[in-house]
Length: 225
Length: 390
Ligand SMILES: Nc1ncnc2c1ncn2[C@@H]1O[C@H](COP(=O)(O)OP(=O)(O)O)[C@@H](O)[C@H]1O
Ligand SMILES: [Mg+2]
Image (cartoon, rainbow over all chains, first blue to last red):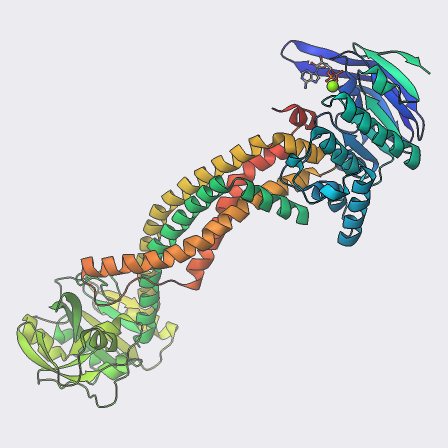
C-alpha cells in the first residue's frame, strides 16, 4: 500500500492553548517499503502515526492510502480502513486481558466476519509465525512483554493489512526481546510485502528499516537513505 | 455482533462480585415489583371474573354508594342508604319499565366466621341461579329456602373451612344449616355465603335492599342505556349504572390500586437503576483504554455502543429472572400477610403472564437506561484520548 502525506498539520487544543504537534509533513512511502521515524520524545511521532492509521485526522492537509484520501472520509469508512487495511502495534501491546492469546489474534477477523474455521486456522498460522503456537490457549496476562508484543504482531496481521504501523514496538522491552521482535517484524516484512512504518528512538532498531525519517518538534527534518 | 456478546460475557465474569451485586439490586427491585403488583393483578382478575360471572344489565344503587363489585374487604363500598322494597315492586311491574325481565334486590353484610371476615349475601332463592349463572352447585346440594335458616356456601370458602352439607354455620348469632355448596372457582362469589333476602333483612333489621340488580328482555348495551336513563328520569336521586358503566368504575378503582402499588414498586426500581448505572459507568471508565484499543483495530462505534448495552442488559435480565422467582415467592408471603391482616377469606395475589412480561420489560428498561450514558461516552470517545487514558 502506498502512503502519501501532503502538507499535514495537526493542532491540538489544550489548556495552554492550541499546540502545533505536526507541521507541514510531506512524505511518500512506497508499497512494500519499511521506514522508520525517529525523534525525541514529544516530537509528534505517535501523532503522525495516528494520522496515517485513521485514529486521528489532520487539522490541514491530505493523507492518501493508495488513491483514497482518508483525511476526508467519514468515520464509518475509516473504521473499515482500520479493520481491513491497517495493522497497529503499540508500545504497551494493548491486548484485551479477558481474552486468550488466540482469541486476541482472532478478534479482528471476527470483526471482519471471517468464518470461524478459517479464523482459527489463520490465527494458529499467525501464532506459528511469531513462535507462540504453544501459548494459544493461555491468558495474555500470563505472557512476558516480548511474548505479548508478538501476540500483538499476530493480531495486527490478522486481516492481512496492506500496512503495519508500529509505535515504539520495542520501547518496553529489554534488548534481547526487542531484537526478537525486530526479527519477527523484519521477516514478516520481507515475506509479505507489507508497507511498514515504525516509530522508534533507538538507532539500532531503526537500522532495520529501508529508510529513516527524523521528526523534530513536529517537523520532518531530514531523511537518510 | 456475536463478538459483542462474547466480550460482554467475559467482562461480566471478570468482575464477578460487582456483577453479582448489580444482579442482586435488579433482582430485589423486580422481586418487590412483582410481589406488590401481584396484589393489584389478583384484585383485577377477581373483579373481572366476578363481574363477568354475574348476569346483570343494570345496577341500581343508593345515592351515595360507591360502585364496587363487592368490597374485597368487608365494608368497602358499603352505605347506610337502602333502596325500598317499594322501588323493587315498581321496577318489576311491567307497566312502567316493560323491558325489565327480572329484578333482584340484594342485601350484604360482613360476618366473622372463624378468624375470617366474609360477606353474607341475601338474595331471592329464585333469583340466585338467574343472576349468578356461573355459580354451580355441587351434586347433593340445593338452594336455600326463603324462610328456613338455610345457607349456600361458596366452593372455595367451604373447602377452606371444611364445610359440608348439613354443617351448621352461625350467622349474626343465629344457627344456619348448610344446604348447598358451590363448585370452587376464581371469583369473589366463590368465597362467600348466601341466604335468602328475607333472612338477611330480618337478621340485620334492615329497611330495604342495598343494591338492585336488573335483567332485561334484550341484553344489549343500547337497551341497557335506555332502561338506565328511564330509571334515572323516574328516580333522579338514585345511582343507576349500566353493566358497562359499572365495569368501568370497578376498573377505575383497580387501576388506582395498580398505580399506587406501581408507584411504590417504582422506587425500588429507581434505586436499582441508579446502582446499575453506577456499575456500568465504573466498569466503562475502567476500560476506556480497552475500548480505545478495540476502536483502533477497527471495531465500529456502533459495536462498542452495543457491547456496553449487551453487558448491562445481560446483568439486568439475569436479575430479572431471579426477580421473577423471588417475586413469586414474595407474592405468596405478601398474600398470606394481607389475608391475615385484612381477615380475607380469599387469596388476593395473582401472578399473571402479563405481570411477568412487565417484569422483563422493566429489567430491559433498567438495562438499557443504565448503560445509555456509558454507551454514548464510548460511542463518542476520541480514540487517541482513549488510548492515552490511565
Ligand atoms: N491529546 C493531547 N492533549 C494534549 N497534548 C497532546 C495530546 N496529544 C499529543 N499532545 C502533545 O503533542 C506532542 C506530541 O505528542 P506525541 O505524538 O505523543 O509525541 P511522541 O510520540 O513523539 O513522543 C507532545 O508534546 C504531547 O504532549
Ligand atoms: Mg509516542
